[in-house]
Amino acid sequence: MIGKEFTQIDWDDLRHFLALAQAGTFLGAARQIGVEHATISRRISALEKGLGRKLVDRRGRRIVLTADGEQIAGHAALAAQQMAVIEQLGRASATETRGHVRISAPPALSSVLLAQPIAALRRAHPGVEITLVGEKRLASLNRREADIAVRMSRPEDGDYAITKVGEMAFHLYASKAYLETVPEAQWTFIGYDEGMNASPQQLRLTELAAGRPIAIRSSVLEFQAAAARLGGGVVLLPDFAVAGADDLQQIEDENPLKREVWLVVHAEIRDVPAVRVVMEALKSAF
Image (tube, rainbow, N blue to C red):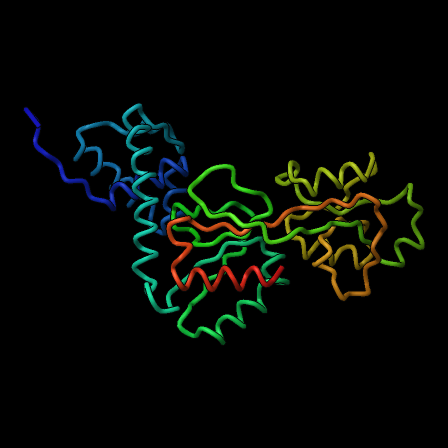
């Protein structure tokens, strides 16, 4: 480069900058990586100094990327994808079924459906270690937050291998005592909090409630079911969540909500032996 000294980029600086670009705040980036927010600030300053470019406009708690920052963030995201693949390949044997695999799945589904196949997998393949992250948000496979994701909506983009593994039906449920003592016109409902208003489950519940109040709200499906068991109202639950239980009565619906279940893995690691056996175990759950 003429008139400018060549600068070697520190990947850790770039990684911290990418976290900031994705989170939008220093605190959010610090939580994502697991460091103090001052570390994020220091890393960004080092990257800006090394590149000789201003990447971030600091506006109170939130930040805005400059034009250079937007460009660097785009390139950094692509680099992070490749680093994630390399790290997965590095921690898993190419020929043996061993290594650490991280799974992201909705919490209620994880506790009911995934414990048995994962325990069976560990008995069959003691060299495979599993971390299960029960979360409603879409963990990023590209940012190494998960190797495999179980999702109830199909990803629209990304270099993923995607397999439909099943469908889940949702019905209204209530305690027998509630249905016997409360007229249908006076039913109240149990649903998700406002953060889930756009979800298919909540939209369907609102439709079925038909103007009757959603009087109890919670982001925790297990709490919703518990409240219904105690006579708190009528709740929309996936059938798997109440399988084998006799303390909630299903309310017939000729057209129940059905949601597809998808297994998602980054295309470049789907043939890693440890990843492959975990995927097969998860498929067996459905």
